[in-house]
Length: 215
Image (cartoon, rainbow, N blue to C red; front, side, top):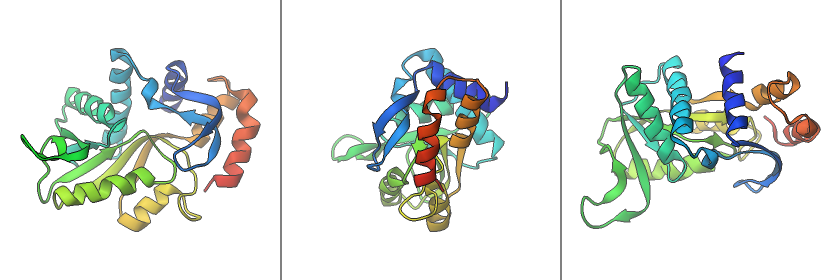
């Protein structure tokens, strides 16, 4: 079993990869859903952080701080930073508040302070339309003049963003930010077809959805 197949099986066994009918943040109705909120145990989040860390190292991302957009990005950034430290790469992590704190240490972010010139990597669950990226970028630039080196996600849904391009491609063309994923939807479909995981009953709807929204 390949690295990608192992991760896909891990998602399915953890109840993270679901099949059915789901209304996404973008408003689209999809026959599958990736819900990282289903990772609920120490073992699961430790294994997940390991997959993210391997993807981070594989692509040679140069960043001193991992940014986890609230709320799902918070445990992802923490778990990835721990896994990277275990692999000899110690990086900071931080996450945004929903509202800026006006007392105590104040600020919009919790964790590693962001300063001008810092290089950061945003850690997210999936990217469908790119809406979450557009929401976190103004917060980051409002905090400090940082360089966003990359966005790290678990699954690239390979869907169009606001136009005809994929959200991943839009992120790169509009902001110059590369987006790296552990797996893609094509990998997941192949895993179903090859019997790595279940979900064969949803294949037809998944392919129809990709024909409509795929990039």
